[in-house]
Structures are given as structure tokens and as C-alpha cells.
Length: 189
Image 1 (spheres, rainbow, N blue to C red):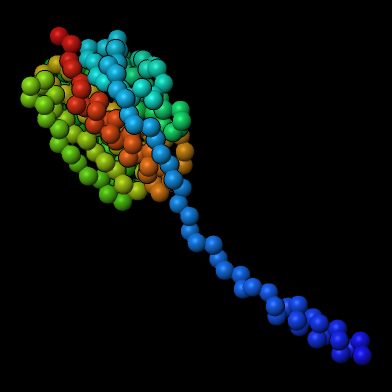
Image 2 (tube, rainbow, N blue to C red; image 1 turned 45 degrees about the vertical axis):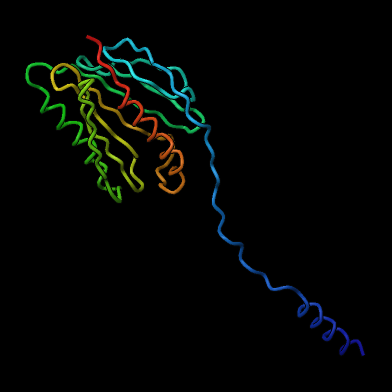
């Protein structure tokens, strides 16, 4: 009798369970506060507006001919690096080429690179914003110049392995900050 009851009881226990279904994909919902901007005072020949979410600016000497400003976003593990160089002795072509070549180095990992021309005739600020799609090290790069005396370039980097899907929300948020920087650059005379 035990030989018959035990197998039948085992069949009931195995046959009565719910089917296991895989969980649907979930997406991380990241919300960032509305950006509030203030004028950034830097010891360089320009000013701009920056997001109050960023930590205080750190000025750095990047080389003999360049100075920089690091705008850190600790909550997003990101930094916008700004590098200022003086235009002199006809070096504008070289500065433009260097900025464009830096962006082109990301084509190995980038899915796409889009360019957005920027022009503010009234303030004599002209430039280009590069938006880089894919798992590239930098998601945005830009430069602005007055074509005569000043050249400012910038790059956005995250302190994480480049995974476009993961950093996309933060990247989009910071692109707005980069656009604001470009729109509010004012050269000191």
C-alpha cells in the first residue's frame, strides 16, 4: 500500500504548483531636481552660469598655455571639465582641430555623434556642441570662442564604466547644463 500511496502523493505535490514566469524587465526611474542656475565667478577671462546642484568649482592649471575649471556633480558621479586657452599668433585653427579631434577619438565606441552649431552674435560667442551616443567615455563635448582672443572647450565624463543605457538620464540632464554654460559665457575684456 505504501508503494502506491507514496508515488501518487508525490505526483499531486509536483503537479499542483504554479508555473514560474520570468519577471518583466524593469527600468530604473531617475528623477533630478529642476535646475537652478547662478553666475559662476572663475579666475579666468570669462563667466558663465552653472547649476546649483554642482559642487563648488575647482580651478586647475592644465598646462603652460591652458587653465581649467572642474564642475563636479557628486550625486551623478560626473564632472564637466572646462579648458580655457588664449587665441594668439593665429592658433585658432589648431585649437579648433584639437577640439574636433578629441571628439572624433570617441567614434570607436560611439553609436553616433551629432553636432549642434551655436552662435550668439551679440556676445561674440560661437561654437559647437557634440552629442555622443553609445558607450563612449564622454557623452558630450563642446567648444566656444570669440574667434579673436578666447577659446573654451568642455567635456562631460562620468566616473563609471560607460554604459549608455545606465547613464542616459544623467547625461540628458547634464546636456542642458552644458547648453546653459554655452549660452551664458561672457568674455571679460
